[in-house]
Each structure stands twice: as C-alpha cells, then as structure tokens.
Image (cartoon, rainbow, N blue to C red):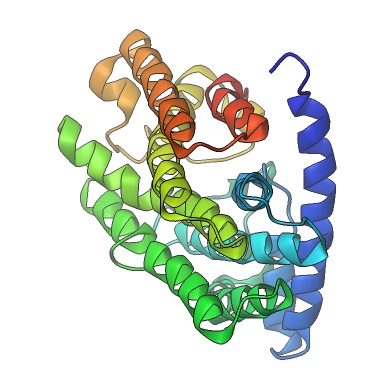
Length: 300
C-alpha cells in the first residue's frame, strides 16, 4: 500500500476514461439526431469521479487482463448508464435539480424533452458499447452477451431503476435500517458492483474472484452512499456542486437516521467488509484496496 500512489493512479485512469467516453459520444453522434447528441455529450462529458469505469478496469487488471484501449471502452459502458441515471434524476418530475458537478443540469441547458430522450438513448448505447468492447477484448458472442446482461440487470428494476423508485417512494418518510440499505444496494451499489464484475468477466476470471469482487462491490456501494450522505450534511451545495440536497427533498439518509458519528462508523465498517471480500478473492489488487479507502475519505 505504501508503494501505491492512488492519486497518480486516479489521475492517469481518469485521463484514459475521458478519452474512452469521448470515443463513445462520437459514436453515439453518428446514430442519433444532433440535438439529442448534444444533450448526450453534456450529460456524459461534464466531469465526475469516473469511479465505475476505474473500478471496471481495475478489476480487469487484477484478474490478469491485458489493459488496452478496449478495456476503457468497456468501462465507459457503466458510466453511460450512470450518466443517464443522473440526467433523469435531475428532471423536474424527479429531483428538479439545478446544478450537477457545479454546472447547470442537462435539462436546464438542452430542455426537458431532449434531456429525457438523451438519457433514454444512453441505455441501448451502453449495452452496445459493452458488446463492442467485450468483442474487442477477445470475448466470444456468448460471453459478450453475458457482460451486457450484467450491466442491464444492474441498471434495471432489480437494480438502479428499482432503487430510484424506492428513493422516490421514500420522500417524506422515515426509512428503517433494512429499507435504507435495500434502497442503496440497488440505487448505488448495483452499478458499482456490475462494473467490477464486467471487468472480471472480460478477463475470464474464475468463480472465486467473481464472488470476492461481488462482496467487495456490495460493501463499497453502501460505503459510497454513506459517504455521500455525510458530505451532504457537512458541506455546502457550492462546495459539492449540486442542488438540491437529499435533506431539501425530505429523504431519509444515513446521517438523518443514525447521526454523523454512527454514519461514519458504518462507512468504515463497510470498507472493512469490502477489503475482506477482496482478500477472500485471492486477487492482488492494491488499486481496489486503496479505492475502498478513497470512497470514504473523499471530500466531494
């Protein structure tokens, strides 16, 4: 760990991810109308931590994959789904958000209709992106389909979309511990976990590695959400670059449910579980180990 520089790793990985996302957006521009393509570009290329593609490529590398351009193209697929989810989350019919990452949200710039259509267009685009990248990485047709299925199952009603629905239903209600965990295992954790599993599948990983990465992903997903709730409670909208907050929307959070100290303890506990899952996988993965720490130590 002492020899591993997460800061340098993240900087290098983000640059490669951005290049992959630009390639993905350029391809999408060829198949959708210009106005929709401009909204896609705004939603996808407006910055971010790029944690999902970095997790995908890190898992691919840890499982013995030869890292090349197509690995980052694969990592772009879950990020396209993530971008769609944020574009739709921000719409007036949902959170009615004005700011995302310090910039006006996509519907504020391109209009509600184009933001809605652009977000929807990113769903099949992400599936095709996964198929194309998997093939470029040497996976056969069946394996490539399995990877696309991993992505779409995490994105759908049993994963992220189901979590968003539970999130909307939870507005104005106090959720118990089990309900809060179930919501965020879907809304946040499912896509983070799928990113890891896709990377491992691309490298032809064995069951032990896949099971360990799934445990890691489930715990990292909860730790990420708890850290988000802590940041919302302790930082300004200007510092975080987003508005409104979950508190403004009267949603249950880990801080409102447990208090700040207990939320921090729970985040650390999930990081410990994530690292345990990684250790059980038998993988040498200093990047994933350090990323688990980053998730709870980040400042935005």
